[in-house]
Length: 394
Image (cartoon, rainbow, N blue to C red; front, side, top):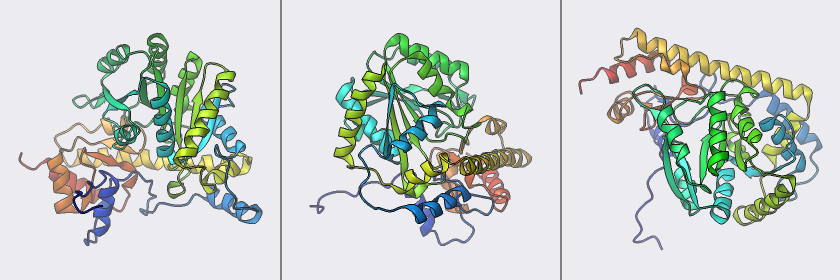
């Protein structure tokens, strides 16, 4: 079967992690894959999660299959998180991570829309793969201006005005991956208004709720679409804000024009999930439900989430300051304006390769840095190395 088949290329992000693990050098730094790390460089299990798991260990009484859509209580808590309250015209299913949610959404778009989805330029490296694997045509719209290191507002809104009715637009709810550049609350209202006027739908990728400004502030885009009374979907991931990376816990929520339409939506959400993975893994969803249904655990989780967000912001500030002190040929203030785990550093591919080959510092080829991977222990070394890379003769 495989004799005359070429090997598949390594994943742009996870493949980088494999190379990092195989690097024998001691003083190596992985700033590629998007996982949160504490000041010691460890990806911790949240205390709120540990406490929820202890409760589950003592009370769980079956390992039988989950319902196709997951437990109803999980869907209720997800809707409260992403909307602020339960939405009667929406339907939510528990999916294997945010990636699973995106794939289910892609299948629904292929079956019930124009089969074309628009993604931002740039976007998460795996978006195109997911949508193309589902048979969608993927097109891009302008988003990031490399010169200003900010939103290309003119190009962005002009493109949205010209997207055909029936197509779908993928939008990052907050903490845009990979740029870290978000749109404002007023701009979100403008986006929702254009969608309503032009007749295209939206798929909102909500992978970092709470990592931008707060749980409440980060849902401004979802709230704008909810107020517009248009159909849209939300793909949620709880890898980052609950630290449940390996539990693969996500959700897909379809918002319809009316409650009756939501009943139709849930039937197709479940039918699609049944074909793709049959039913979701239980553990991560049960952790989240346990936390969010407990006032004590919920408050503890929010405190831990706030601490993660603040540590990332401090790392951003330290990186910008460290590079500025080293005289890099770039105004680094843009780094502190970006939100979430990632920063489009402005590093070229040659500079990224120099950092990997000569300094054992691993960064995605686009120059995207996982700021959450910077710690007090590696910050000075990274700043020294990046400054050396940027000051190399062309």
